[in-house]
Image (cartoon, rainbow, N blue to C red; front, side, top):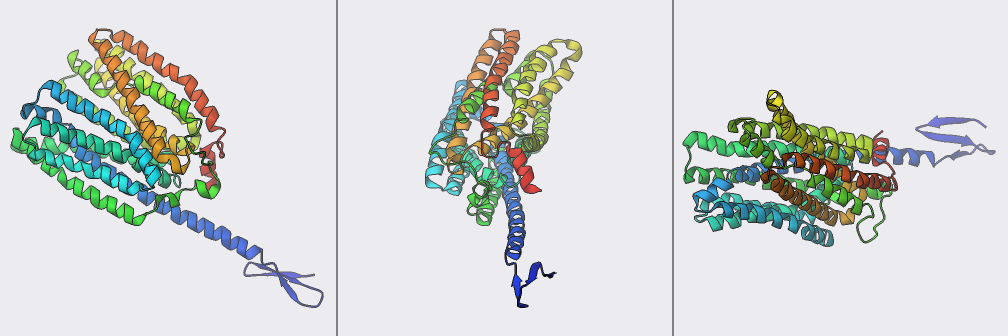
Amino acid sequence: MSGGDAGGMTLRRGGGGDRQTNVDILPRRISIRMRSRLTALSSNTALLLVVLLGIVGLFGDVVYEGARSVTGPYLLLLGGSAAAVGLAAGFGEFAGYGLRLLSGYIADRSRRYWLVTFIGYGMLASVPLLAFAGRWDVAALLIVAERMGKGIRSPAKDAILSHAASNIGQGFGFGIHEAFDQIGAVAGPLVFSAVFLAGGGGIEAYRLGFLLLGIPLVLLVATLLCARARVPEPADLERIPIEGGLPDTGGLPRVFLPYSVFTALTMAGFVAFPLIAYHFVGRAIVPESVVPLLYALAMGVDAAVALIAGRAYDRAGVIALAAVPLVNLLIPVFAFWFTSFQAIAMGAAVIAAALWGAAMGIQETVLRAAIADCTHIQRRGVAYGLFNTVYGAGWFAGSVLIGLLYDAGLVPVIVGITAALQLAAVPAFVRVRREFAQLPWGDRAAADDAGRT
């Protein structure tokens, strides 16, 4: 018997001179090539969606971070008291985090992730409307409405992002989004800085600034419409249904409980930047004018670390979560302890700001990416809603405790308490890692690397 190869087919001669074609090889090769091509196209579409959502996040941060930088003074100009400012800010955050669980549930039940995302972003219209608020209570309601909008859109947006990121690496996808977010967070307050420098202060300057924030809002809606038109069904990008993923058990996975405990404890021990800034100025560690520069440094570090942390998660897997309590633990050491030594106080303040930014970059990237890797695609909305609620509740409770300790003059106790909370999260992390090892792909990072080679 002799054989030849023609166009990828193996030809065989039989006993009567007839030829038999091995038809299995060509379809198999075509299947492999088509799968490779489809995977490449899917990855390109996924990356495009991640970038578009990042641009949406950038414009969104310009709008609401720009507004949040001045809402306190604006309420005071309209006749509100300090208590009114605190109530508007506090209730807005509470309502925003409280809505996330409900919003996530509705998004999962209806499967209308884009619609929920549009509704949430649409409530950013309350920011330019602040220009027409003639009374402080009306302005306060608009501020609360903006925070509620963030609570409504966050779970659905994260679910959409997780579908796209599954093709390029969950960590890398969320890292790109966080980097765009922080660019917007830095640019937003500059809008009002430019307005004040150009025309001075006064209530008219504030109103002009709020109106100008309507421009990035229009650009946001246009970009979101483009993303929706390009990828109407983000779940189609998900790699898990193709490769054999988690079964739908009708609820959240077993790992979610220790993961929530880990998140709550690490965030409870995470010192908020306003308190750090308050300490720096109150103890004359840095001039008041330097605080915005330190915050800008933190945001810049946040953006850079988000990309690095995301890649680290994709390559190393859930072990990357160990960086969360480690970095969180160092922040109060530099911010409250090392700044008490005059010779190194300024340097310690700079390092503390950089560490705070790094912690935010890791938390906003790795913590969110891991959710997508341990939950079924039909439970992502609820998962992100619950995660964000736990995240916010833990940070709020810890901030209240740390604030009370600071007012009592117990700064050394703050260092000890925050360290204890981070260390208490270690057993939960060990449990999370053990549960992740039981997932169908074992180490998701290894599976992703294998799928891209």
